Each structure stands twice: as structure tokens, then as C-alpha cells.
Amino acid sequence: MKLKDQVMKKTSSKSTKLSTSTPAAAKSLPVAAPKVAAAASAKPVRVELPKKAVAAAVPAKKPVVKNEAPAVVATKVSTSAKSGKSIVNAKIDIGFGNTLFIRGEGAGLSWDKGIAMDNVSADEWRISLSGATAPVVFKFLVNDLTWSAGEDYTVAAGDTVMLVPTF
Image 1 (tube, rainbow, N blue to C red):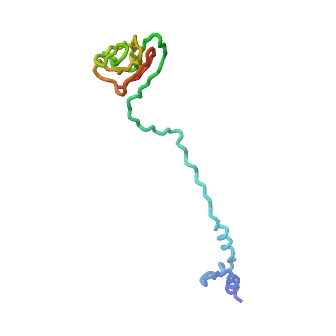
Image 2 (tube, helix red, strand yellow):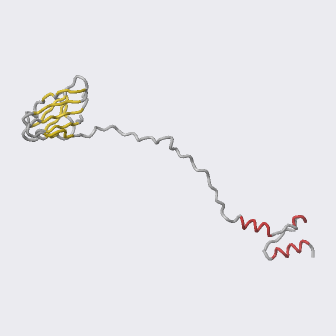
Image 3 (cartoon, rainbow, N blue to C red):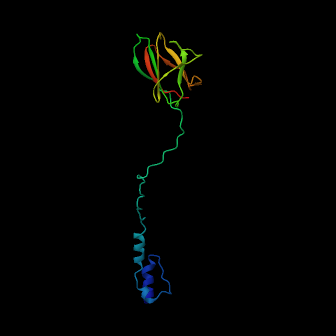
């Protein structure tokens, strides 16, 4: 029996055939070796890629927010209802040469003509309203011409409030 016939006989049980153009040196190699290697490499190979660098050093850009008028803030400072003296403070910078006025009803106010408030700092105005027996309803005006935005304000008799009006 020739070497070729021996190799064919060994591999026929594994359904592998050798080609006749193979050199004699290659015919002497065991046929089962490639199948074992193929079976070993049949498992999926897991490759871990390097983790991406986290961009924590660069903060995310904040979205641009359109400036809107600040909300009206009312703060009750003190209460002395027996005096009937209500104090209204307004925190707003209306510009050099302008005056903040107040109009309303109660404690000597009128909706027809405003009363000038006292400028106590660059951005703070104050008025003391005496004789209030009921809540005082009012609004602010710049130079007694331009009304503040939003609803009317209210201060109880004898209370002090700090407001931030918008125009």
C-alpha cells in the first residue's frame, strides 16, 4: 500500500480528502491537526477596546437663556398694625435723574396723581404711608408716567414690604 492510500484511508473516516497535486512531504502531515485547531478557534474571541477618555475636565456649555424680567418679590419685613403706618420699599435702579412714584388707593394715595418716593440708595426707594386703616393697593411709576408691569401691589395696614418691580 502506498503512502497516499494510507493517508486516504485514515482521513476517509473524517470525510477529508487530499488533493493529488500535494507534494509527498505535505502528505505525511497529520490531517486531524487542522481540525483540532479549527475547533479550538471556533469560540468567539472577546476583544476589549480601551475605554474612551471622559471629558470631565471640560464643562458642558450652558444653554443661552434669554433675559426675562425678574419675578415680583414681596417680603414682609415687620408688622405694627397699631401705628397704621405702612412702609413700601422698592428695589430697582431706574437710572440717574429719574424718580420713582407711587399711585393707588388708601393711606392718602390716588390713582390720578402719584407721590414721589424717597431715594435711599442707588437702587432702593422708600415711602412711608400713614393713616392706613385697611390694606393699601398701589403701583409704581417712573417719573409719574410709566407704569410698572404686572398686577397691583398690596400692603396691609402697619406692614413693611420690599418689592422688586419690573417695567
